[in-house]
Image 1: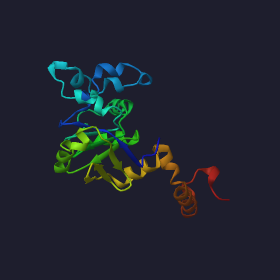
Image 2: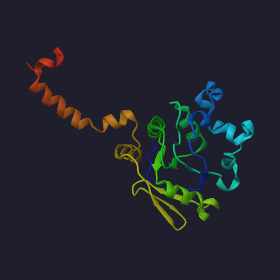
Image 3: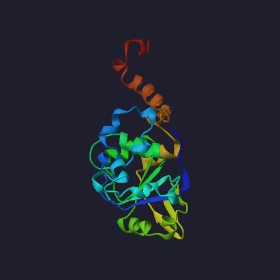
Image 4: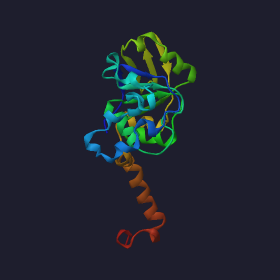
Length: 207
């Protein structure tokens, strides 16, 4: 997984709350293989006017071309546990989602796929959604090490689980996270073999 330290890119202002995983990628598109890319299906119905709703059409505005950050309102990624919702965001090019709160499973899936779920206060999200520099498509800086967002002259702090932060900064997936603890694991095994020799497999027991 690619490490995340900071990024500078336009940020798409999505002025919606309670964006659920069914909206992030409608189920009918999940029949396609991931290898084809899910980015084109991100928020499909809210971008293309499904049921007359184009509230996510902002994603396609030229001023936000190449955006790697999305700013939304509370409870982003609620609903089902489908990891394809994160795939759609990642395949579109996003590496950070800024919101006051996230669906728990969505946030966990995001981190496992290198996507930063940056939690900010509701009043700070509203300030970002009205920030002139952000709305003009100027780059916003997301600094994970410092846990701050810089948009023009605005500086906003964000929260993230300390374990998730370490994973993202180092680019660790589940296997790499385990490997990072190899010394502790080896030390425990050696100690446990002495303290509980009867519990070890027969081929590992001391003579």
